[in-house]
Amino acid sequence: ENSFYKMSNAIKRSLFRACDCPCSALAINCCQFGCCIADVPVSDVGFASNANNADWMAKLVTVNPSLTLRQVVLPGSHDSASDTITRVTPFSASGRTQNVGVYEQLLRGCRYLDIRVGGVGSSGTEVDVFHGCLKGGKLELVVDGITTFLKEHPGEFLVVEVVAEYGRAFSPQQKRYCLDVLRAELGDLIYKDNDRSKLYNDITLQTLTQTLKKQVLVLLNPRIYKGFEYEGQVYDENYVAETYGFFHAHHWMRNRWHNTRNIEQLLEGNLTDVQKYTNDRNALLTSQFVLSPGVGGIQDVLHLLVGSLSLRPISFVYQLYQQDKMDNFMRAHADEAWNIIMMDFVDLAPALISFLIGLNFPQLLQIVQVTAQEDVSGSSTMDVTDAAKSFVCRGKMLYLTNLQQDLGLPYGEGTVTIQYKIGQAASEQGEAQVLKIPFDETTEVLVGEYAHSSGTFIHADTEFVAME
Image 1 (cartoon, rainbow, N blue to C red):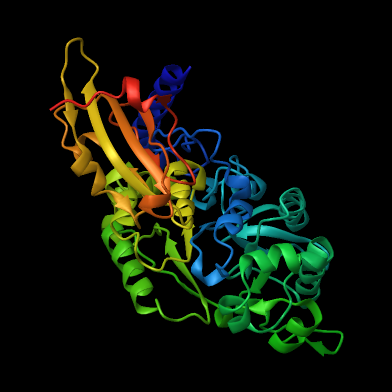
Image 2 (cartoon, one colour):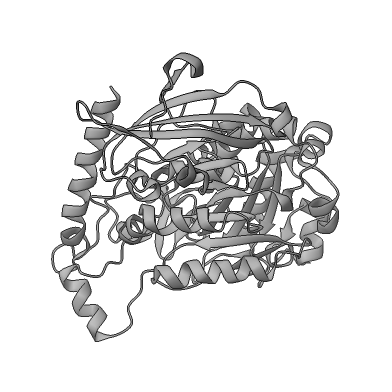
């Protein structure tokens, strides 16, 4: 079954890469319909049953109850509801940045949502999702997905940013209706204390969810407040905070758009920001790992016509999520004080999301021994323990993004056997566990307290054989 799954994914990835250029070419797909948008991860990784991203915060507070919201690494999604833009809408491929809806994103571990909306027509009660000029589904359906998740998972806490999409008509009546929908749906789950220092520094996640029974912080982009006067009442920051318990996003969170399609510039820009604001505990820090398609001149237009440049976010994501790009970057800089990690197409990076979540868990990982063997009869076993140890992040998570390169193997397919212990300290770590994992060039491996890659557990004393 696993072999069939991997073969199926490999075929789908090959088809996407073959079709991406013609689907991106304006000379062929002039209306940029949402065809050939990849829905399989860039790399293969499977997880055992202990990795359930739907309830990761509830699990976290049981083992690390002192964490506050500013101290936690939170996976998040960019233009979270853009999956509601139908694929048959002209230029939908340029506007869709997610394959799955907000409910599914939350199940996969996202705890920050970026909801972009605007008014429709003259009706004061019609507010829909927008990305640029592209219209998606109704706000009510999106909020219903959020509410359903929170009620099903009472130990989870979300940050929801609501953005008035740039350039979209949004009347004061429609804005008030938007706020009313959010308040009516989310109700008592909303955190309403207008003291961000208290929330970020003093109140633990455990207190938030278990004592206060609060599960969502709602932040409003400043464009919501612009020209917002209805029936004689000015809906400014103070009035909205007092009446609804929603707060000004730019005062509660740093969130810089890097506006680049260059991967290196994007990664370095986020690294600069996280290092600059490491000690700022009075605002959340959102790191936007989002590449921005754009047109810089006549040369870009020519490239767009033939498909060597794309307006499709999926084309850029498939480059960014390659094992030697964002995965390696996050692994190399895992010690930084990351907070919110905003991403496109979160379903295409399951290993990275579980890695980010795993960084929050406190138990230390001790690598005892790692060996690798090629899938060839009579092949010898290589001891690659030292190489593997160099990729243990924060002392907690082993993350191998490309086993051949990471472990210095002369082959790209085989089996890796990992013997390890988990505990707060060496004296507390019990019997070693041994995990045997088949791999190829697309396999990523995670091992830690929170999650481990799927494989076969074997008995350390009888079946783990170390070779020179």
